[in-house]
Length: 151
Image (cartoon, rainbow, N blue to C red):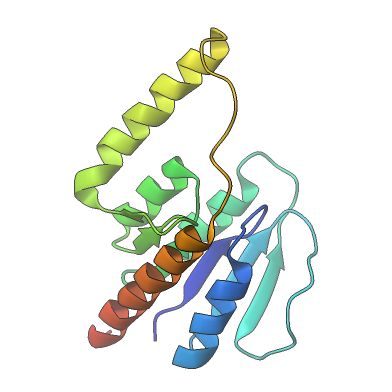
């Protein structure tokens, strides 16, 4: 069975992941740098990693398998998981693919350079109800696609 890995530090869609995972009876693994409250459920696991740089990302990338699902806003982590043939989406429901990850990495680098030079400030736009709805729809699609694949 596929598993859902969540890059959980600051993830705004934990409840949505739990809802889909429960309905589909999939294990969801939340990886974070600090303890967080999650429901007591044998299909829910919290992994607290050390504070090392990219520790949560490394933990996920080392364990994810083909057709697992990863929820992250970290584009380099998304790229690493795609290399392992996992299915990846961000908190707003954007699905990363082999075809889109290169431009996402390039845009990330460009934005980083713009911020370094003070030409770009601010962060991502706040989550909306529409974003949550899109996330739920895309997560459900990825789960169904993963369940159709035999391991």
